[in-house]
Amino acid sequence: MNRILFVCLGNICRSPLAEALFLQEIERLGLDGKYEGASCGTANYHVGDPPDPRTIRNALMNGTTITHVGRQFEEEDFKRFDLILPMDVSNRTHIFRMYGADSQRHKIKLMRTFDVIGTGGDVPDPFNGSEENFQEVYDILSRSVRNLVRVLEGDID
Ligand code: 4NP
Image (cartoon, rainbow, N blue to C red):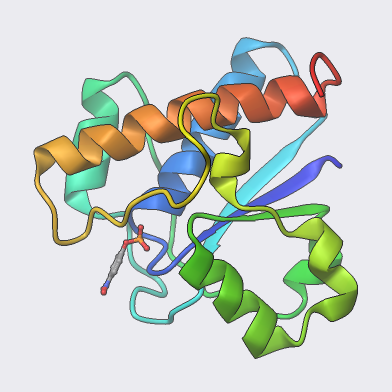
């Protein structure tokens, strides 16, 4: 369970931030080298693009630096990764449908399965939202990623 892939729609807002937070957390805990974190989108709109400037700015304000180049999910990702974490139900459905992933379903979990606040559900898409929406995404993802690492490390169930 060491290779983790974060997935959203465009791969410019939520999933590159989740990836950056994951890499930051494993580095903070001295676990770099043990895990691999990456991100991609189910859509191809932003392949080759940097993250959304609003995501980069909000993350920096919160002490997180993001460097990423957008790419689209591909079937090979089922082989490359141990755990695939879509940001919302729509992206999970897309992965199931597009790639007939029945045999791989055990690898796919919604990102907010790991949130300690709320009852799971979606990481809301901030693309058409305000600064507050970007901050809400940051807060959800930083909580979820910290908890994810604790689960991966076997500290909690
Ligand atoms: P993301 O947000 O899935 O969190 O990267 C979006 C980015 C781009 C678009 C939609 C959502 N778009 O429609 O271009």
